[in-house]
Length: 367
Ligand code: SF4
Image (tube, rainbow, N blue to C red; front, side, top):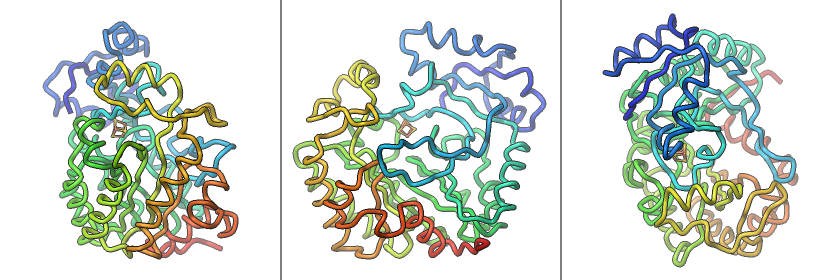
């Protein structure tokens, strides 16, 4: 983490995480009482996204730590639950939605961990199947160098029966998690992409080989794992490149240790296009055959998506016929023409994923 500005909410001074993080960073913090003191310098900087990536704000989460993933009514959602540990990211992917999602974007880390603990206790008391992840508004593991808290969460999830924690990342610093008693209630998951995409569009992330090696280590330590191909970008030669990644994935990790694999082609809100053009002037990902979808996002023309998905799914099925693969945000027609079935035929997407979590993670929820 390269932090140049450290802000601490007056109300966050007392928390153990605040003192630990301050001790680990050799910069003087600015204690603030108003969020404008954080936002204004970022907004006024030449590149707010870059400024946000080096400005760290230690604060309290005043909203809900546990909340449903927003999803959309137009496409099939997976009924995921977010554990909201912080915002934004120190890595830098051209397509990252967080660049235009927060106004302005800033690295926020929530230090009121006791409140998070209580929120999780409420969830666990229900003992119902839940898939909970910290990687929606940030990368799950970038915070570990600052304040290693993942092991605490892993141990907490290990002691209950209905929920599974997903830690989604593009980092590979997992050695300190290998010996933690996880009881298979934590899924370590990696976002994967082609070498071409990683090189041109994923700055400061780890290499594909490093991600696959980290996943293999986690499997050896007994963790269930998952993978996300999202966004998949259509470019000349992309099908061969994605097939290559899939072959390497299954060479590194046995399919029976994989809880799920998600697939999603590139989509973006129109407001993200100028951000990508300005910050990644070598990237060509926004220049494709896009149309505006029902949720307002630009997506590849549907026949293109289907043709691409069919090729990729055929390759997955050749190697791993039984692995749970699914689409993030596609409609029934795309499901049917790509997978050969709609989620409804399998009881719905949430149920498909819940069943896979039950099978792989040994969940024993209340009926
Ligand atoms: S790793 Fe994820 S959160 Fe971080 S910049 Fe890339 S897409 Fe965004």
